[in-house]
Length: 240
Image (tube, rainbow, N blue to C red):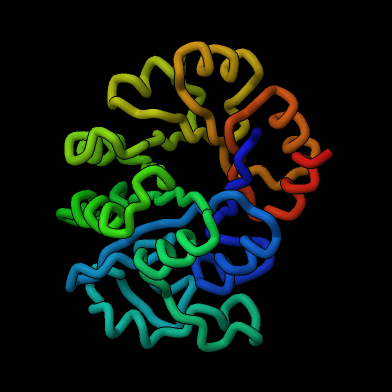
């Protein structure tokens, strides 16, 4: 069964990476939530895609230069629609609690590709373990050194390599960093790659698939998971 990953929550309907977006995704029938982890200057793990707060909040500057208290005062909803005014930037803990209550898988993308958040991997895994969510989480990143470090911290944590290029035999490459999955840009995937990945014991969860025909194609070739902004559309495709 293809896993329905809601991209930054229900990103097509709500301000991304907010509790409103995560809750809406669950209401729309997702199996899992994909989100992004950054770290404040005082070590809090918050959920935001960009390294800067400018695009999705009322603030300005780098996440790493703000304290958690400063981040928490920002409006993370008004940029999307007036009805979401006052929405806050959530924490890893808040999403873990929500996922635990609703039996939802979480894909945490560790954002260490541009800014090196020292100790973010250890802190994230420690928090996941505190909530006993090890079996309901997969960690992904474009920084594959970061994923290798995650496996060194906890060999049982699941990881998936993010990439955009057409990698040659990506399932073989995934093994070099001990990854359990590949998370490719969806254009790079075809039935042959899926077949070979499965033969090599590697899962495939492509991003970001919003076109219904593409969803049907991927479900038809037996993809493990699909990351989408429209979990309701994907749910309907899977059920059909």
